Image (tube, one colour):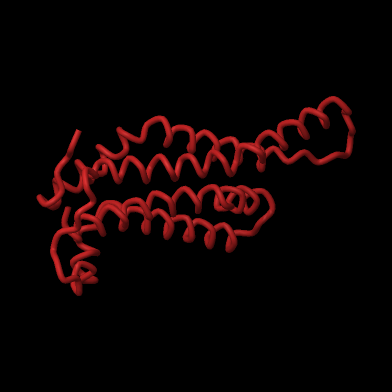
Length: 176
């Protein structure tokens, strides 16, 4: 594997991790809260922030070869190739996708269970003036689901990223 290929893979893994973190860490909560209680300016700012996060994801995932070339990340090393033993591009991408999904699943599982139990208790008490936080429960559930889907579909995701990259840049090939 060349240094350029490794940096491309790392950028793609970072892009996937950043979109997942941005969506689950409050972008959805901010948007829905602004829609319910906010004014027009706060809605516009949150939409612009969402578009910026999506643009960063697209840039890191779909234009990774151009970023590596533009920033000359592969320069400054003595050798062009990096020997990783039997690891291929697809293995690294699969492992990164699985780790990101696993961390998301592990991070949001306790929160989802805790919120579910809390919502169940509140629904059984039937208190009239208790405000129930369905939004936090939904966000933790969606983040949990996305983590699960990343863990179970890591091979398909890696294939998609490698296929996209091999169309733009012939240096990475799909290994299956």
